[in-house]
Length: 215
Image (cartoon, rainbow, N blue to C red; front, side):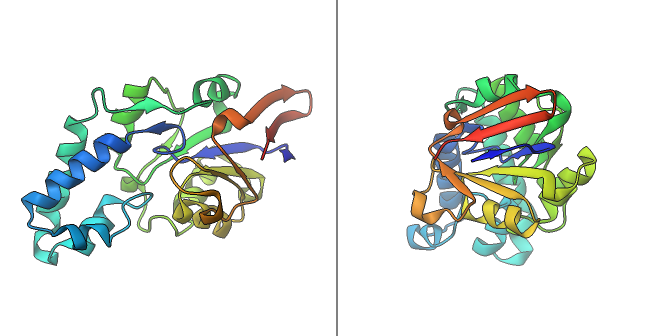
């Protein structure tokens, strides 16, 4: 696929970087603290969803604020050494004009920015869970990013590794690129699916930004 968009919108964890080991470690410890069984924990989708939604699925409403604060603290404290760049991330971001991209994460701003810093990513714009009322698969996060960048949603490309994120991109009317980093290719409904950002190249031409994604 070759496309000339005005903006590229990246999910964070599983797309630009991986903190999967930290995520599993922290959520497993959190589940033990709150007496959640392995069966209950396994039945809930963790990836690509705001922590507030996950916590609300697992604990009584009265305990949600306390439980949410606890998992946030566990994850922030576990960032050091628990985050690494995924293939192709550094090379692709270096090729992009700063005004042309943003990170759209389901994490809170504190956690999302902590992970980005640990991975050495200086994002020009971050849309986090704190900024929205409805998380992915709702299109609100991606529509907000387009508005902040001042671009037409139809001229944006979304890069996502999670089905919920890809659905959010589609519902926002954006071109979608699925990354088979945490899900299999047949689980990802996107305009094109690639192995990682190593399969994506960017070139700035006289006519603007040109993106090539090789399936």
